[in-house]
Image (cartoon, rainbow, N blue to C red; front, top):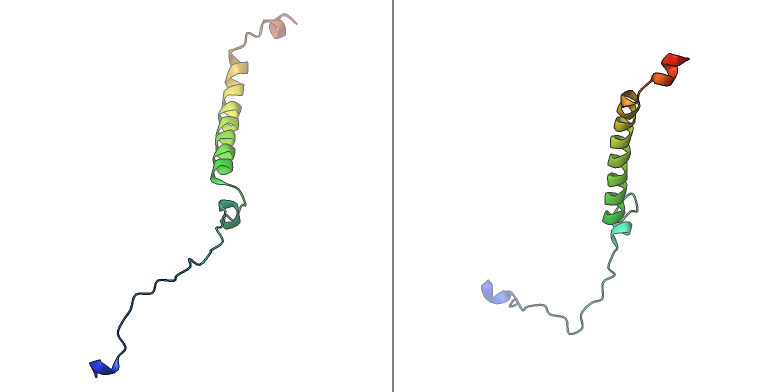
Length: 69
C-alpha cells in the first residue's frame, strides 16, 4: 500500500509568484494609515484636555470688573 503512494517532493517554483502587496489603507476599514489614526487620536486627546482646562482658566481669572459694575 505504501508503494502505491507517490513520493513527496518539496514544491519550489523556479520563478517566484508575484503577489500584490496591500497597503494598510486598503486593509483598514477606516482607510487611514496607522500614523494617521495615531495623529487623530492624539488630536482628540488634546482637544479633550483643552476643553477640561478652559473652565478652570476662566474660574481663576479675577472678576473685579463684574463686581464694580
